[in-house]
Image (tube, rainbow over the protein chains, first blue to last red):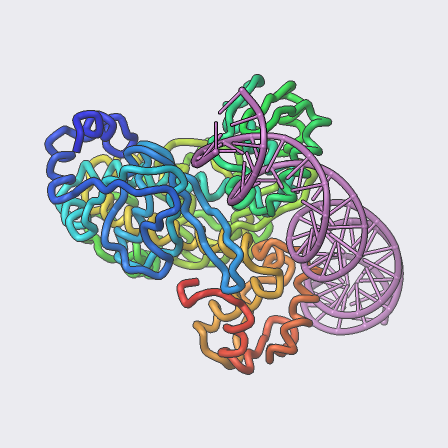
Amino acid sequence: MRAEDRSLLKTMPLFAGLPAGIIDRLIYGSFVQNLPAGAVLFQQGDQPEFLYVLLSGRVALTARSTEGSEAVIEFFRRGDVFIAPAVILDLPYLMSTRILDDARVLMIPAEHFRDQLARDAALNAELVKELARHWRLLIRQIKDLKLRTAPQRLAAYLLDLSGGKGGTIKLPEERRMLAGRLGMTPESLSRAFGQLVAEGVTGRGSRVNIGDPTQLQRFCAFDRVL
Amino acid sequence: MRAEDRSLLKTMPLFAGLPAGIIDRLIYGSFVQNLPAGAVLFQQGDQPEFLYVLLSGRVALTARSTEGSEAVIEFFRRGDVFIAPAVILDLPYLMSTRILDDARVLMIPAEHFRDQLARDAALNAELVKELARHWRLLIRQIKDLKLRTAPQRLAAYLLDLSGGKGGTIKLPEERRMLAGRLGMTPESLSRAFGQLVAEGVTGRGSRVNIGDPTQLQRFCAFDRVL
DNA sequence: CGGTTGTTTGAGGACGTTCAAGTACTGTGG
DNA sequence: CCACAGTACTTGAACGTCCTCAAACAACCG
């Protein structure tokens, strides 16, 4: 594990509030694995053996139906911890991972993590907050799926990326994957982009420009809350 | 607060593992409120002032789009704690509540709850598990919305209610509300029931009979994991 | 028993998917 | 640097699912 990795850990929301000693104890017995794009870390249904921290690269959590279509539930970036709930409860993963860009992953043995959790109050307190934050992201996604049309979901996603500002942003994901995350097919995503031209959204490839954020916000429909 | 309320608290997943003293301290300063069906506990966007425990009755968490259509995110029953994440983080509610059946609600002041959380390690540990369990329910709902058709979602919901067994079950919610929860209109729910007749589902009103659970399971498509 | 509300049914339409073809990227080897 | 393959993305047409609107029906309650 590199020095930069340790300093990354210290900046992560989950660990930032913890004394260095706890982090050391937590990652005792852990190791770093390098994974190529396309690799699969685990499959839905597997019993959790590790808690994962993404040190670099990109990862998607996906679910597959028996018919074979694949839905993307979430993306993770450098500095994200993922699938803590399965590890905490020692219950099978509900999703599979897919490495999108070559990644370095810190693997913390599940059993060890649960031990530390049982021992350390501060870690628990931070984890509560982490889970609560995450909970809100999932609620937002459910609201999105139930209340918005495909173009509105795209608009909301773009505004999220841009932080509500206008200007040019870079899509972090391939459009194919983005479509899955937004609950539509790549074709529908393409048409959704087409519709957003009327709302001042332009751009090719992974570069997208938001002309008028206020107009786009109005287009999404929804209270400020989101 | 009645004696039966206290014994209810002791049986709740969140509190079952905690010593009685902690529960007493936690509910210090809390009070019980009686609410009629149709009442609204809070609106999305409100700053959280209380953590709620449902002592009796039924409640729905809903979200409204600016156009006025209402989506149901979750139902809660006797013994459920709801919207902990907003209280934990002291961030505005993402949803509104709707009382479905006359309810008695234990209201724990948000500030007090956060204080206890900061003080008590055991409470934190239980809350982590509670949030993790809940997290999995939300993931299941997202998978449902992204991978299943309306009739499949209904079938999965019915199987959930019946615990995977056949036989007659009673729908706990009005069909109108159930439709919202499943992400469809009441009309579509009605037609979905119609389609499930071919899969051995019959019944009128709130009573539904599952003829062949195995067939229904096959109809839902999905791995065992759900 | 009428009024109110919730559920069902039908017809038409919008949104999104599927399937198929065409076009633009990206990276590799000449 | 260009030609080329391979992949991703876009576009078009036809279809299916689900929604909307409207009306009929059923259940509940005073």
